[in-house]
Length: 82
Length: 202
Image 1 (cartoon, chains in turn red, brown):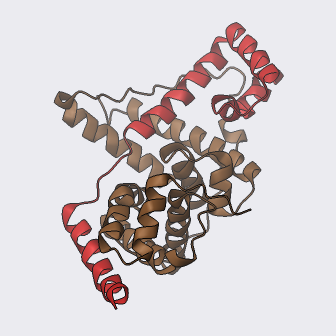
Image 2 (spheres, each protein chain N blue to C red; image 1 turned 180 degrees about the vertical axis):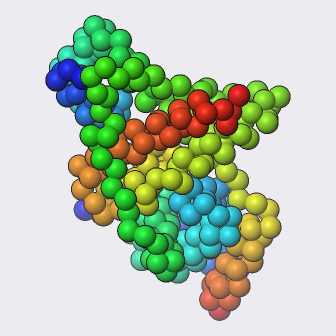
């Protein structure tokens, strides 16, 4: 891996998160235009983040929710109404 | 600084709870239960552990809500409690120390022909089986992350907290958040791509 590729590889996440200065971003984007390997690298990172996010959300099961609410009612119902 | 940054709906519900409303308590739970449960599940990997995390989080939250000064968002405060619960649970289980992820191991070497195949997530309900298999691959990859990387990844990429918010929740520096997040993402990309290539998902 070339030195400029290595440098951008290390700051890929900050680039994707928009945490770099605009000048640095422009420099990185210029590099991506000229370097298919790094372009592929950033795209696969972006897809990984997107995929994990889209597949992540769960719902608390109904019985677990019921137990949670009755435990909270038990603990706070009395203290609150006294 | 006493500026209230809590969401207006949360602010109202907190006031109602402090005034004795059980309905407000349940509405707060309803607003955050799925997120806290998801976080617990992604952190611990088991339904029972996720339920324990949700119970401990809300129990402590309502116990100390009278002291909550609304200088941070309720969501951030709840996740701080949840993260502490996950760390405590891990300590109780006497798990192995965190394995460090080295950045160098992911730097492609000269001559490497590295191609990562990351599938797309389908929103089509007819792809249910494919989605279930892919979800297993993703969950397994996230579970393989060492605990400290998993904490940062879940807070940043799954829950969408900013770098600063994540640093505040975990009480670590923003630089540590950035470093750990980058390594976690590289690890997950490698793991998901390898599983995909090996044919877990076809």
